Image 1 (spheres, rainbow over the protein chains, first blue to last red):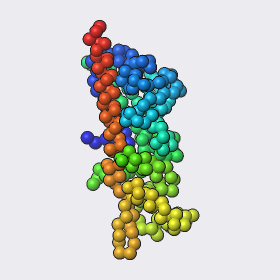
Image 2 (cartoon, rainbow over the protein chains, first blue to last red):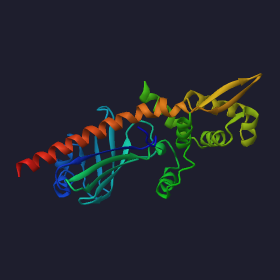
Image 3 (cartoon, one colour):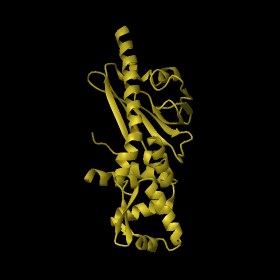
Image 4 (spheres, rainbow over the protein chains, first blue to last red):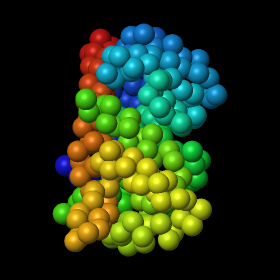
Amino acid sequence: MTSAPCKVTRSLEIRAAPGKVWRYFASQDGLRRWISPDLDIDLRVGGRFRFLGPDAKTWVSGTVLDMVPEGWLILSWMEEGQGWQHPARLTLALEATGAGTRASMTFDGFAGVGRADWPDLVADYERGSDQHNTLQALARLAEAE
Amino acid sequence: MRTGRADTLFKVLADPTRRRMLDLLAGKGSLNVGQLAAAFPDLVASGISKHLMGLRAAGLVKADRDGRQRIYSLNAKAVTGTLQPWLSKYERYAEAALERLRKAAEEDEADT
């Protein structure tokens, strides 16, 4: 598969309405069922969260950046003790489909985690113009090979 | 260890001088030390060498011999070799988490 090197996206179809699926976004207990059983989260915009991350060794912590019921939950995402200067970002999104709901999980902003100018980089992402992103430039070279 | 290589990569990228070197190499394709040094008049030769060593250690830059001098260029394999394996843990995590979400939500649906 081909994808941008600093972005990870996965999605799948759920045979349940967005309102039903959102119940697993709307509380700490709901999120613990699928994000991580040891998740602690203050579930409001600006609230903090922390849990043992994807590799089961590294703690991940961050802040709730945005939350829209039955729409999305966006978290900043920082691996602790890994030399990150700035967080990446995780977007959990729901979309109604004919048969139910499409749920997606997108990690992005990884190219900025070691960088001191991360806010500029995010602005670049949002403008859709990340030509100054060195890793993207490297990736284009890799794909051209 | 692969995770360690990615951490090195992020730390190397944290430095503005090294990022400018990478940007220059991305723009020009390849440069020798003299050409790189000309872009950084404030840096002594040993400073240039130190940054180039850091970039090479992280696998971001490769050096090819051309007669008596080294020609530096970007190493595109840094992404596929270092970053992609590191990102794959996130891919696996996203797949597993979504599967748990689907199972929980669809079980509810079956109960009602």
